[in-house]
Length: 315
Ligand SMILES: NC(=O)c1ccc[n+]([C@@H]2O[C@H](COP(=O)([O-])OP(=O)(O)OC[C@H]3O[C@@H](n4cnc5c(N)ncnc54)[C@H](OP(=O)(O)O)[C@@H]3O)[C@@H](O)[C@H]2O)c1
Image 1 (cartoon, rainbow, N blue to C red):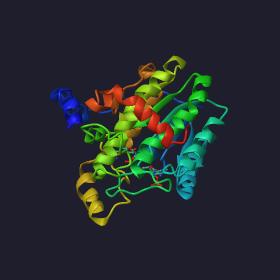
Image 2 (spheres, protein in one colour; image 1 turned 135 degrees about the horizontal axis):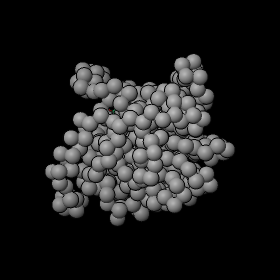
Image 3 (cartoon, rainbow, N blue to C red; image 1 turned 45 degrees about the horizontal axis):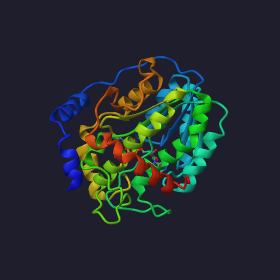
Image 4 (cartoon, protein in one colour; image 1 turned 135 degrees about the vertical axis):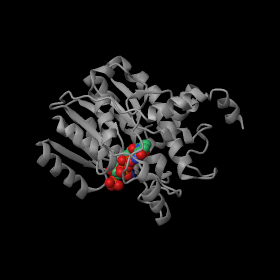
């Protein structure tokens, strides 16, 4: 009830209309080359991540992906090498586990070359609550905690290299957490779980800590932004039951676009000089947009940050 009172007044119809209008816009295009620059991308074995890896490889970037499936990772690298002559490697990491989050972060921190663009894309949509081997709710772990741990452990590298753009593949779905986060129950132990609420909350948490990370890195020339990649066809939700998959195939996919538009937007946000100085911003594809009121509630950030440090075993 308190949360409803807190945010109710901040909701504006104009914000919703802006989102609906932005949903119809095409992403801006950047056709600059990105020759020899290192691009790190999580979840590149299907959907948005796959098309984005191809887009960067086509423009000359070195691709380093972080995925959970070895066979698919190797197939992707072979494809990028064959189609574009691109340099491609991968780190194997199931980003739902703390060990793998730390392993991926440590491997990236060891890299000599600067990371020009780091895209946090890996994600899941789970109708039913599941727990990871560390006892965390899976949506929270993959969408939110893994990027948090990786960014946190890469801070020093970014500060040293003084270059880089960090991009979260976020979602208009952060609006599902309309009344904010349950900071006392981020793992959905006491509140009724639903796939949409868990998804929205994880994306909301990502937007909230983005504000602090962007602030911490802004004096080092690093930008941190988030984007909604459009409503696009992908493999998302394949872990769910047959009813969900039927609904997804016949309803959602039939009105979804190709994930090529997401890749185009992610290329623009990572490469274009037009957004080189833009940080701490939510984009709908490539249009800057005001997120929902709970995503702008800076009062929540310190506690969320502290909890994330503990859950991520960063203290
Ligand atoms: N599709 C949309 O309309 C839409 C809209 C808004 C936001 N998004 C966001 O876009 C991002 C990409 O989703 P998508 O739609 O492209 O879905 P997708 O086709 O299912 O791709 C998800 C990627 O994440 C990887 N992944 C999942 N769990 C992982 C884990 N535990 N460790 C490492 N990698 C993992 C998957 O690997 P596997 O290949 O091994 O499964 C896959 O490469 C997500 O963050 C999603 O929330 C999508």
